[in-house]
Length: 196
Ligand SMILES: [Zn+2]
Ligand SMILES: [Zn+2]
Ligand SMILES: [Zn+2]
Image (cartoon, rainbow, N blue to C red; front, side):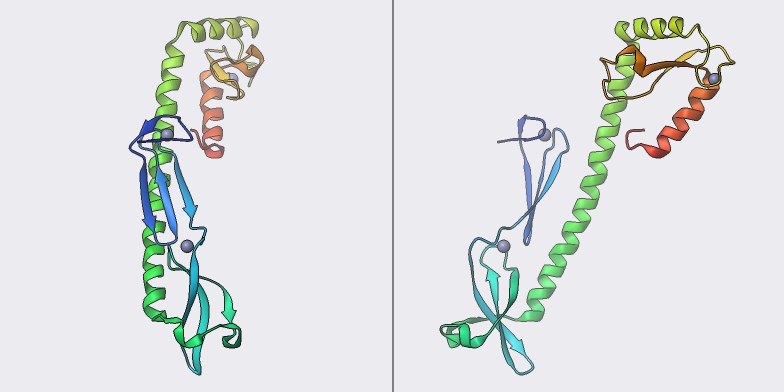
């Protein structure tokens, strides 16, 4: 069991290894993280090139090569450096990368869906609450039951100007609107926001 940094809950944290990157995923809050290998342990390797060998540094944990080429004259014992098959090596990393990209895509999607659904259900709960009903009535009364968007129609709904203080909103963050204006505003907000 591991504790999630985001939601603080202990759970069956998912950790998946994709070559030089690890993806962690919390099944409770759907937070995911992408952690790159720090290449702490490494050794020299060499692979064939047209005119001999190229020497590079390779991580002993993720087997990724990093840094530039190393001149053979700078190597202690070129003969002893392990030979790797460059094409096979690259192909493996390419495959891992494709797997990682696919997995990340679906995690991002799940996470967004989860938070959207969660937000909507909490939002609906709140709209049913006594606190909201009272605030709503006060705002309508303050605005004289006139839509503050068109200043023409009768206000029937209360709109959030900001969600910064959601559930604790000061009344200046709330405004009375008519059906028509509310629909139009919500439509515009939806296009610009991640929540809606
Ligand atoms: Zn979590
Ligand atoms: Zn590494
Ligand atoms: Zn209006």
